[in-house]
Length: 349
Length: 277
Image (cartoon, rainbow over all chains, first blue to last red; front, side, top):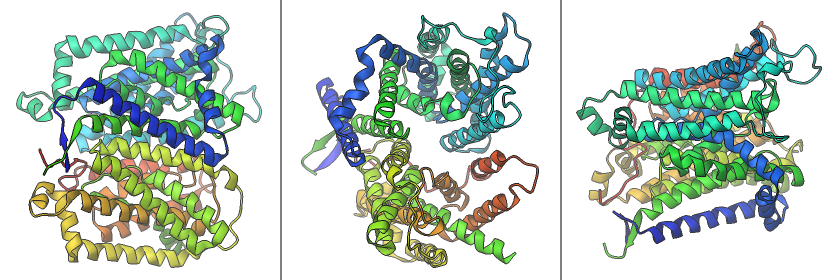
């Protein structure tokens, strides 16, 4: 008896495998809920509760916005073989860049555009650094981008507790509020900052076109799928990889600007700026299997899970770590299902 | 001076243990990026059991939790041949998340009988030596190295690649679990969410810095320990913000990776083994 690669798995088999693994992750989640002292069914219900009313749906959309931007960039980066785990940090860099423009440059009609530009730019610098370390020194980008997350985390804490701490706030770790010019318009009285949503959708569409309809995209795909062939064809990984890294970092930076300019209107503690978007976006991109367009479907799905996790935290006063648990289990079940569905069991040796 | 050396060893010990555990599976070709989560959850398991039935069984519980998580990672990395890097990251998130969730009730509870740090530091040193001997002098070590370098050849000689990798993950997981138990039973005899504070990532970088060699990991771990000691000692006495000190371990990992990025890794590291290919 042994495993073997299944050259073309049938769609029902793939679906069944994914269903089984999702069920297993739900079971695992249920066990953790039980250990914590909550009835699993009640918790599952709360996870899905944002679907029940308009306010809940608006919450889902609000969570979807950064996931769209980051997820489509990561889908591209993963496709090219750059495992950017640092979107969380790139998002925070974007928030820092946006906050700098809002707080320290004279406000005007150009403020928002400048915020997006500097925020995205800083995000790109941050991921570009990891790409440079990989291309120049061979440093594993999974680890460097992950470590960079912690570095920006402390940078933001330092800024809001130190030099950028607001003159008008006491005791809290905030900057002063942004001027009105730095505020993104929202839909009605929800927290849906729609210009960023439009940017996210445009990013998914644009990257899909770039990846599948241009010569550059063709080179990217070859490099990602078969590095040997790419070398044989003379494709320069030293140029293609940083380019994809910069794009994904730029988009994560835009997401960070969206969060501070659309929701908080000030720079604040990092754990409140990003509610785990960088990590969740890895799931978004992984689910999309390297197709930026599919992010339009996978981002709302994970947006629902984040909004549901929030409902769990609020009504059961669970610690914020519950989101990590859900994301970890989901990621495991996804890669497990992907691996298993591409294999078959052979009963002879 | 003497104090600095002692503290360096004591602080280097969890890093040493965790990196020995990761090193063991990496020599067999399996990357373990779940170290941070494995440490966190085994620290909690060790603490919870130690509160109920005493610290010695607490240690066993920590080792058990670590081994179990190693086997769990093996399910994905070895049996299913999923992407080892992603599986490890997911395990890190899961372990951190689950420990934060389940550990909430232990937050702020003191441990009545902490374990001596020095004793465990010696155990870690002995483990490093033992691991070196295991790798260089035993048949299992030979199998493990060949599975990490050339699984195809090992398979042809009748070595069970899956079995060896599985065993290495379980043993390595146990050592990582010991690192977690050291944190919650000896080093800081209590439980707080996030108490591993990035040590798991430092340990992973140390494996690379040490060139996948257990004895060199000892020196590296004590060096990191010394840096951490200096960080605590200098905090407040020099005009550098506390956040810069807190960010130091992560910066160090990046520097280490840049300096030793092309170090010689086991050839099959990170690659799932499929007999048919």
